[in-house]
Image 1: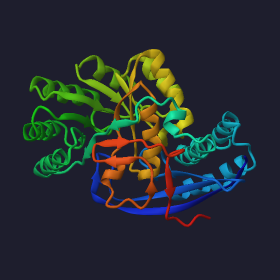
Image 2: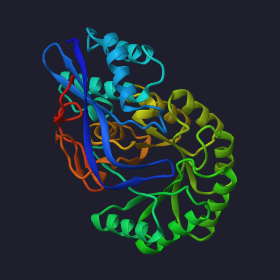
Image 3: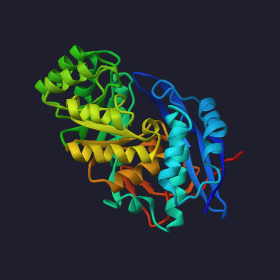
Image 4: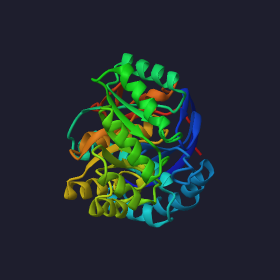
Length: 361
């Protein structure tokens, strides 16, 4: 079974509400969809969002990397030589992690289908059902409270609140949300690199002193400021989650050895796909560091690939895979079942998605 072709298309899906963080505001998903076809006619699907402010990737760069570099390198390779395929994928072009991730997950989808097994079982098969949080975008406080209450009403028990724009004002946001949703809802705070180390320590300590019971704080400082993040980790009780600071295995080793953070957020668009993400899971297991599996602003294909990873690994103790819940519509057929906060794997082979309404070329 050989790789016959690798094609791409574009999908555009409106969001329920604008997605706002300290880094950007987005009103719709517009992603590259990848179709990898084998010589027997079977296909695998992948997806990559353009997230230039984090990965540096754009729609144009993703498609160019796939058509001009990745596809020529992989066409004709035997699918059962998975390690060789992944080595070629990661060696044929530097960086371009989103393009690699889309092709990587499509190949894993195809590979699992060839073995007639769901992807999460192929990767370890730990938990067929996982629970995700829901993102609350940065807005004025009344709007964030309203959005938080709406999420809880839908059944979400974990909220990931975006902050990082207004320093100590962020503590007021969290305080009002906690007051509104009560003590039983878990709150995670994501600063998206929006604070300095001093600000982060001041804000997190203030939240601790006020008894806001924050589950974790994600990427409080700039991605490159590992010394600053370590300072925050050492001077607060709340768990610190490294996100933009961890792209690949080398970053994971640095974080774990230095104890710059308590946890690591694995995102396929940063790692370049499942192959490298699995390495980070192994590193985390060695150092006894828990992981979150998260997503960029992705639709159901990429989020489902990440969900299979989360469902497969014990070291993954937190899940931030709310992309499909943020979309106004689901244009795909089949796949894991997204039931508000619950994501349930099915017995479908591969990632499980069978229908993709995209014109591939």
